[in-house]
Length: 413
Image 1: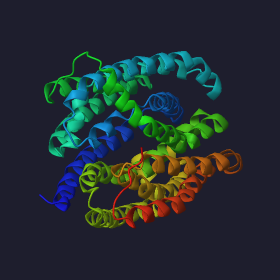
Image 2 (image 1 turned 90 degrees about the vertical axis):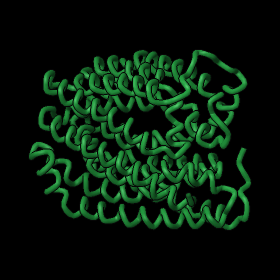
Image 3 (image 1 turned 180 degrees about the vertical axis):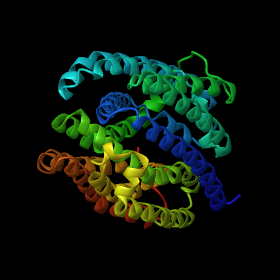
């Protein structure tokens, strides 16, 4: 099968995954938004900010490493599982240890209990069988569709049920934990090989040596993606963070999902084409045009009809989302293109270049976010995020020129 058919088939399956997840996610968001308040969403937003922050600072890059390996990866599974388990416990301890500082920083004492409970999530994730990455590596996206859809369905039903019963954000975290348990079960019953508690120091050093730039990139990317959230929560309060987070969910996630789908499919395909510059260039251009054709219409609808979208989906208590949604619709479209490019950089092993692009975006956000939020509130946070993303485009164009004007790729070490 040619690369184009691989991409089309892969995109079809991953798109199906995202469609199912987005339908369930929107249904879940609409239901719990009518039960919980913006302040509740802000509390949960603080907990997820901390969870994501610690997860990223302990990122090993093992999944990208396993996909990039053209040989069999079975010999790495045991070590990857041990590292994943240890990482999960470390993340949980760091969340608990930092919880009082976080509560003080955001002036949100209600967040403490949620932080303690959400620390169980990374422990559970650590026990997931690393072999599930073979779905992506071997382009078996139909099997991934089945697994991801079932996990998310169970998680969604659990979240809605417990939020309805408890009428607080603890129901969301309990639902997340049930989803993690389901993923552990499926990863051990549907994927081979099964991992064992065996650690190989040589393979660990190989993975860690590869992952240093991935770790740096994900750290920069965290602040790049969540610096605006942190500024809003710190300067404007928990309720404003909940409103801003809802605008983010409605605007950025549907747009970035398109790029995520394409990136996930094209990454292993680009890896296979990395020795053939002509075919790689052709594949990239075709997928880029497809992303443009999908992203632009969605962003226009979000920009021109925010009031109708918010009123229909969330109700009148969320009307403060409307002006923020317009700004983030533009940001989401621009951001979608930069996310899509990551698969190309990683496929030719330009981790360092991708890290630098992310760092430049972070600098742009960091310079503008505090003064913009102080001047224009939540709208200023969206404008700061947009400024950081636009700043990366000259560097992205430079690296694209560098990649496609060479006959061969000089791999970064």
